[in-house]
Image (cartoon, rainbow, N blue to C red; front, side, top):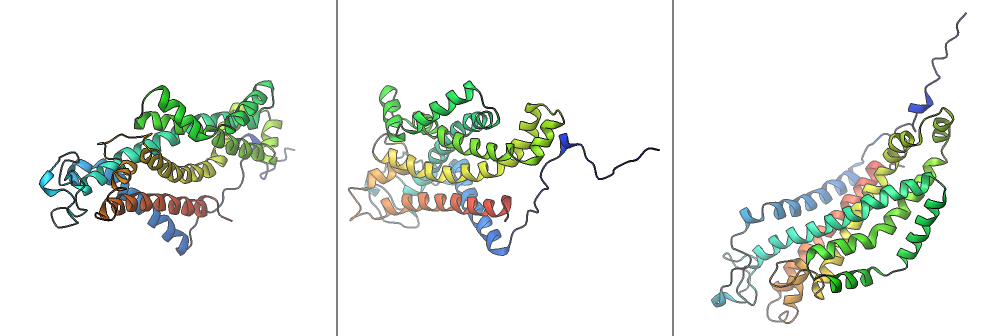
Length: 290
Protein backbone atom coordinates (compact mmCIF):
# COMPACT_ATOMS: atom_id res chain seq x y z
CA UNK A 1 0.00 0.00 0.00
CA UNK A 2 1.35 3.43 -0.98
CA UNK A 3 1.51 6.00 1.78
CA UNK A 4 1.64 9.68 0.86
CA UNK A 5 2.82 12.50 3.05
CA UNK A 6 1.12 15.71 1.93
CA UNK A 7 3.10 17.79 4.39
CA UNK A 8 6.45 16.90 2.82
CA UNK A 9 7.73 19.45 0.30
CA UNK A 10 10.67 19.57 -2.05
CA UNK A 11 13.36 21.32 -0.03
CA UNK A 12 15.06 22.51 -3.19
CA UNK A 13 12.18 24.95 -3.60
CA UNK A 14 11.74 25.66 0.08
CA UNK A 15 12.39 29.07 1.50
CA UNK A 16 11.57 30.88 4.71
CA UNK A 17 7.90 31.56 5.25
CA UNK A 18 7.30 34.93 3.60
CA UNK A 19 6.54 37.68 6.05
CA UNK A 20 3.37 39.66 5.72
CA UNK A 21 4.28 43.05 4.36
CA UNK A 22 2.07 45.61 6.02
CA UNK A 23 2.51 49.20 7.08
CA UNK A 24 1.02 51.04 9.99
CA UNK A 25 -0.09 54.60 9.34
CA UNK A 26 3.06 56.32 10.74
CA UNK A 27 5.29 54.05 8.68
CA UNK A 28 3.18 54.54 5.56
CA UNK A 29 3.35 58.30 6.04
CA UNK A 30 7.13 58.12 6.32
CA UNK A 31 7.40 56.01 3.18
CA UNK A 32 5.03 58.21 1.16
CA UNK A 33 6.55 61.50 2.30
CA UNK A 34 10.08 60.32 1.53
CA UNK A 35 8.94 58.98 -1.84
CA UNK A 36 7.23 62.27 -2.72
CA UNK A 37 10.38 64.27 -1.92
CA UNK A 38 12.61 61.97 -3.93
CA UNK A 39 10.21 61.70 -6.88
CA UNK A 40 9.83 65.48 -6.94
CA UNK A 41 13.61 65.95 -7.14
CA UNK A 42 13.88 63.25 -9.81
CA UNK A 43 11.09 64.70 -11.94
CA UNK A 44 12.62 68.16 -11.62
CA UNK A 45 15.92 66.75 -12.89
CA UNK A 46 14.31 64.88 -15.79
CA UNK A 47 12.11 67.75 -16.96
CA UNK A 48 14.48 70.59 -16.08
CA UNK A 49 14.40 72.08 -19.56
CA UNK A 50 10.60 72.17 -19.60
CA UNK A 51 9.99 73.66 -16.14
CA UNK A 52 12.79 76.23 -15.81
CA UNK A 53 12.05 79.77 -16.99
CA UNK A 54 15.61 80.61 -18.09
CA UNK A 55 18.78 79.05 -19.42
CA UNK A 56 20.88 78.24 -16.31
CA UNK A 57 24.00 79.74 -17.92
CA UNK A 58 22.33 82.86 -19.32
CA UNK A 59 24.00 85.95 -17.86
CA UNK A 60 22.00 89.13 -17.24
CA UNK A 61 24.44 91.64 -15.71
CA UNK A 62 21.74 94.24 -15.15
CA UNK A 63 19.89 91.82 -12.86
CA UNK A 64 22.79 90.57 -10.74
CA UNK A 65 22.03 89.72 -7.09
CA UNK A 66 18.32 90.47 -7.36
CA UNK A 67 16.31 89.05 -4.42
CA UNK A 68 13.49 86.54 -4.95
CA UNK A 69 10.63 87.99 -7.03
CA UNK A 70 7.90 86.90 -9.42
CA UNK A 71 10.34 87.09 -12.34
CA UNK A 72 13.03 85.17 -10.43
CA UNK A 73 11.42 83.12 -7.60
CA UNK A 74 14.84 82.13 -6.18
CA UNK A 75 16.53 85.41 -7.07
CA UNK A 76 19.63 85.80 -9.25
CA UNK A 77 23.33 85.20 -8.67
CA UNK A 78 26.33 87.47 -9.03
CA UNK A 79 26.24 87.07 -12.84
CA UNK A 80 22.51 87.74 -13.08
CA UNK A 81 21.69 84.08 -13.79
CA UNK A 82 18.33 82.79 -12.60
CA UNK A 83 18.93 80.77 -9.43
CA UNK A 84 15.77 78.65 -9.77
CA UNK A 85 16.96 77.38 -13.16
CA UNK A 86 20.41 76.64 -11.78
CA UNK A 87 19.06 74.77 -8.75
CA UNK A 88 16.73 72.65 -10.90
CA UNK A 89 19.47 71.83 -13.42
CA UNK A 90 21.79 71.13 -10.50
CA UNK A 91 19.51 68.25 -9.53
CA UNK A 92 20.44 66.49 -12.78
CA UNK A 93 24.14 66.37 -11.94
CA UNK A 94 23.81 65.70 -8.21
CA UNK A 95 21.29 62.86 -8.56
CA UNK A 96 23.09 61.35 -11.56
CA UNK A 97 26.45 61.28 -9.76
CA UNK A 98 24.87 59.82 -6.61
CA UNK A 99 23.03 57.13 -8.61
CA UNK A 100 26.13 56.14 -10.61
CA UNK A 101 28.30 56.00 -7.48
CA UNK A 102 25.68 53.84 -5.73
CA UNK A 103 25.54 51.40 -8.66
CA UNK A 104 29.34 51.20 -8.91
CA UNK A 105 29.47 50.30 -5.22
CA UNK A 106 26.47 47.96 -5.20
CA UNK A 107 26.99 45.69 -8.20
CA UNK A 108 30.51 44.35 -7.46
CA UNK A 109 29.95 44.57 -3.71
CA UNK A 110 26.82 42.40 -3.82
CA UNK A 111 28.29 39.83 -6.20
CA UNK A 112 31.59 39.49 -4.32
CA UNK A 113 29.77 39.54 -0.97
CA UNK A 114 27.56 36.61 -1.97
CA UNK A 115 30.58 34.66 -3.17
CA UNK A 116 32.58 35.51 -0.04
CA UNK A 117 29.74 34.46 2.27
CA UNK A 118 28.76 31.32 0.36
CA UNK A 119 32.16 29.75 -0.26
CA UNK A 120 35.22 29.38 1.94
CA UNK A 121 38.31 28.99 -0.19
CA UNK A 122 41.65 30.59 -0.84
CA UNK A 123 40.06 32.93 -3.37
CA UNK A 124 37.46 34.23 -0.91
CA UNK A 125 40.12 34.70 1.78
CA UNK A 126 42.10 36.85 -0.65
CA UNK A 127 38.96 38.91 -1.32
CA UNK A 128 38.48 39.36 2.45
CA UNK A 129 42.04 40.57 2.91
CA UNK A 130 41.78 42.93 -0.07
CA UNK A 131 38.54 44.42 1.24
CA UNK A 132 40.04 44.90 4.71
CA UNK A 133 42.99 46.73 3.17
CA UNK A 134 40.63 48.70 0.93
CA UNK A 135 38.56 49.86 3.90
CA UNK A 136 41.72 51.20 5.56
CA UNK A 137 42.14 53.70 2.71
CA UNK A 138 40.14 56.90 3.37
CA UNK A 139 37.56 57.65 0.71
CA UNK A 140 38.82 61.24 0.53
CA UNK A 141 42.26 59.95 -0.50
CA UNK A 142 40.72 57.90 -3.34
CA UNK A 143 38.79 60.92 -4.61
CA UNK A 144 41.86 63.17 -4.47
CA UNK A 145 44.05 60.58 -6.21
CA UNK A 146 41.63 59.96 -9.07
CA UNK A 147 40.78 63.63 -9.62
CA UNK A 148 44.51 64.44 -9.64
CA UNK A 149 45.27 61.60 -12.08
CA UNK A 150 42.46 62.47 -14.49
CA UNK A 151 40.41 65.64 -14.19
CA UNK A 152 37.91 67.32 -11.94
CA UNK A 153 34.44 66.52 -13.25
CA UNK A 154 31.27 64.77 -12.03
CA UNK A 155 32.04 61.49 -13.84
CA UNK A 156 35.41 61.03 -12.13
CA UNK A 157 33.81 62.00 -8.81
CA UNK A 158 31.08 59.37 -9.27
CA UNK A 159 33.61 56.66 -10.15
CA UNK A 160 35.91 57.49 -7.22
CA UNK A 161 33.05 57.59 -4.69
CA UNK A 162 31.68 54.34 -6.09
CA UNK A 163 35.05 52.60 -5.83
CA UNK A 164 35.52 53.86 -2.28
CA UNK A 165 32.16 52.37 -1.25
CA UNK A 166 32.61 48.82 -2.56
CA UNK A 167 34.11 47.37 0.68
CA UNK A 168 31.17 48.55 2.81
CA UNK A 169 28.65 46.90 0.47
CA UNK A 170 30.80 43.77 0.33
CA UNK A 171 30.97 43.47 4.11
CA UNK A 172 27.24 43.89 4.59
CA UNK A 173 26.37 41.43 1.81
CA UNK A 174 28.90 38.89 3.05
CA UNK A 175 27.52 39.05 6.60
CA UNK A 176 23.93 38.71 5.40
CA UNK A 177 24.91 35.77 3.18
CA UNK A 178 26.62 34.06 6.10
CA UNK A 179 23.43 34.42 8.15
CA UNK A 180 21.42 32.84 5.36
CA UNK A 181 23.81 29.95 4.76
CA UNK A 182 23.48 28.86 8.38
CA UNK A 183 19.69 28.66 8.12
CA UNK A 184 18.02 25.24 8.15
CA UNK A 185 16.32 25.67 4.79
CA UNK A 186 19.69 26.26 3.10
CA UNK A 187 21.14 23.16 4.74
CA UNK A 188 18.09 21.20 3.62
CA UNK A 189 18.45 22.49 0.06
CA UNK A 190 22.10 21.45 0.02
CA UNK A 191 21.24 18.04 1.44
CA UNK A 192 18.71 17.54 -1.35
CA UNK A 193 21.40 18.15 -3.96
CA UNK A 194 20.39 21.64 -5.09
CA UNK A 195 23.24 23.38 -7.00
CA UNK A 196 25.06 26.18 -5.24
CA UNK A 197 24.20 28.61 -8.05
CA UNK A 198 20.51 27.74 -7.61
CA UNK A 199 20.73 28.35 -3.85
CA UNK A 200 22.40 31.71 -4.42
CA UNK A 201 19.87 32.97 -6.95
CA UNK A 202 16.73 31.33 -5.57
CA UNK A 203 17.27 31.72 -1.83
CA UNK A 204 20.25 33.89 -0.81
CA UNK A 205 19.69 36.83 -3.17
CA UNK A 206 15.90 37.29 -2.62
CA UNK A 207 16.32 37.13 1.17
CA UNK A 208 19.22 39.58 1.30
CA UNK A 209 17.96 42.00 -1.34
CA UNK A 210 15.61 43.99 0.96
CA UNK A 211 18.36 45.02 3.37
CA UNK A 212 20.66 45.87 0.45
CA UNK A 213 17.97 48.11 -1.08
CA UNK A 214 17.58 49.90 2.25
CA UNK A 215 21.35 50.27 2.61
CA UNK A 216 21.69 51.62 -0.95
CA UNK A 217 18.95 54.18 -0.33
CA UNK A 218 20.65 55.41 2.84
CA UNK A 219 24.02 55.43 1.13
CA UNK A 220 22.69 57.53 -1.73
CA UNK A 221 21.68 60.20 0.77
CA UNK A 222 25.16 60.20 2.24
CA UNK A 223 26.64 60.35 -1.26
CA UNK A 224 24.59 63.43 -2.11
CA UNK A 225 26.15 65.23 0.84
CA UNK A 226 29.62 63.98 -0.12
CA UNK A 227 29.16 65.06 -3.74
CA UNK A 228 28.11 68.55 -2.70
CA UNK A 229 31.03 68.73 -0.27
CA UNK A 230 33.60 67.72 -2.88
CA UNK A 231 32.12 70.13 -5.42
CA UNK A 232 32.20 72.85 -2.76
CA UNK A 233 35.96 72.41 -2.32
CA UNK A 234 36.57 72.14 -6.07
CA UNK A 235 36.92 68.39 -6.60
CA UNK A 236 33.64 67.86 -8.45
CA UNK A 237 31.72 69.91 -10.99
CA UNK A 238 33.48 73.10 -11.99
CA UNK A 239 31.88 76.55 -12.45
CA UNK A 240 29.77 77.58 -14.29
CA UNK A 241 28.22 74.07 -14.14
CA UNK A 242 25.06 74.33 -12.01
CA UNK A 243 25.68 71.68 -9.36
CA UNK A 244 24.36 72.09 -5.82
CA UNK A 245 27.78 72.04 -4.16
CA UNK A 246 29.17 74.45 -6.75
CA UNK A 247 26.24 76.82 -6.15
CA UNK A 248 27.02 76.80 -2.44
CA UNK A 249 30.68 77.52 -3.16
CA UNK A 250 29.72 80.52 -5.31
CA UNK A 251 27.54 81.91 -2.53
CA UNK A 252 30.01 81.87 0.36
CA UNK A 253 31.34 85.40 -0.28
CA UNK A 254 27.88 86.90 -0.74
CA UNK A 255 25.84 85.41 2.10
CA UNK A 256 25.39 88.67 4.02
CA UNK A 257 24.14 90.58 0.98
CA UNK A 258 22.42 87.75 -0.92
CA UNK A 259 21.17 85.08 1.50
CA UNK A 260 19.14 83.32 -1.20
CA UNK A 261 22.30 82.14 -2.96
CA UNK A 262 23.02 79.75 -0.09
CA UNK A 263 19.53 79.04 1.23
CA UNK A 264 17.89 77.58 -1.87
CA UNK A 265 20.70 75.18 -2.96
CA UNK A 266 21.04 74.15 0.69
CA UNK A 267 17.31 73.46 0.90
CA UNK A 268 17.48 71.38 -2.27
CA UNK A 269 20.22 69.21 -0.77
CA UNK A 270 18.52 68.94 2.62
CA UNK A 271 15.08 68.02 1.26
CA UNK A 272 16.46 65.42 -1.14
CA UNK A 273 18.60 63.78 1.55
CA UNK A 274 15.62 63.91 3.94
CA UNK A 275 13.50 62.20 1.29
CA UNK A 276 16.05 59.41 0.85
CA UNK A 277 16.38 58.88 4.61
CA UNK A 278 12.61 58.80 5.13
CA UNK A 279 12.22 56.46 2.18
CA UNK A 280 14.85 54.11 3.62
CA UNK A 281 13.11 54.23 7.00
CA UNK A 282 9.77 53.40 5.43
CA UNK A 283 11.27 50.62 3.32
CA UNK A 284 12.82 49.12 6.42
CA UNK A 285 9.46 48.96 8.18
CA UNK A 286 7.86 47.50 5.06
CA UNK A 287 10.48 45.04 3.86
CA UNK A 288 11.86 44.02 7.26
CA UNK A 289 8.82 43.82 9.57
CA UNK A 290 9.39 42.77 13.16
